[in-house]
Length: 301
Ligand code: ADP
Image (cartoon, rainbow, N blue to C red):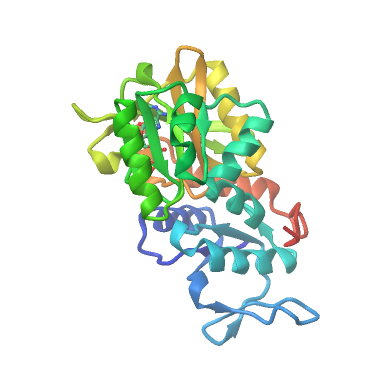
C-alpha cells in the first residue's frame, strides 16, 4: 500500500515509529507536512499538491495533526476524504475530539461516565457554577490546555472563584469539574484501535502533584483494565467516531470516568510502558480495513 502520514515532521517519535512499522510490513510511506500542502478546492476532481507535486494513488492516510494546526490540518485531511482515500481518523471526528465542550456533550449523550462538568460564559454565575459541580475542591481546566498545563485544582470555593475570575479576565474558555479525589493522582490511558483496547497504562503523579501527566513528572506502567474500563474506552472512541484514540480515564468510586479522548495519541509512552508494538498494530488495522471510498463522512463534515 501507499500510506501518507500527515505530520509536521518525520523526526517526531510517533511519526518515526509509524514509518518504521509501515516500511517493516512492506508498505511505501510518505510523511507530508499538512501546512505545506495546497489544493484547488473547487476543482472538479479533488487533488492535493505537496512541494509542486500532485499526490496520487494513496491507499491510506494516517493523520497526526497537532492541536496547534487542527484547522488547516483538518482541511487537508478533508480533501483526502473527498478524493476517496481511506483516512484512519476522519476530520469530523478529530474536530469533535479537539473541542472539549463538544466532546463532553457527545460523551454525555451516549451515556458514558464523566466527572460532573460545568461551564458558563459569564463570571456573574461563578458561585452557581461552583455549586453545580458540588463545590470545592474542584478542577478548573482551560479548554485549550494540553499536557496538564492550564489544569488547576482549587481546594476552596474562594480559590475557585479567584481562578475563574482570572481566566475570565484573560478571555480564556474553561470548564469546571468535580475533583475525583479517589483517583489519587493517577489516570489510565487506554489505547484504542478499531473496537479494541490494544494497550493500557496507568500514569501516577509525582509526590505532591494531582496531575499525572508525564510532562509533569508522572510515571507510567502497564495496567490491566477491568471489563467495564475496556468497554468505556471503546465506547468513548466510537462515540467520537475515532478508529484510533487515546482515551483517558479516572478510576472513581462509581466506576470509570472519561476525561478526554485524544485523536493523535502519542506512541512513545504507551509502547515503553506496555512493551506492545502499538505502531505495528495500527498498520495491521489499516491493512485490514483500508478501502477506497470507505470514509463515512467523505469530507462532508
Ligand atoms: P491535559 O489534557 O492538559 O492533559 P487533563 O484534563 O488530562 O489535561 O488533566 C491533567 C491531569 O490532571 C489528568 O491526567 C489527571 O491526572 C488530573 N485530573 C484532571 N481532571 C481531574 C479531575 N476531575 N479529578 C481528578 N484529577 C484530575
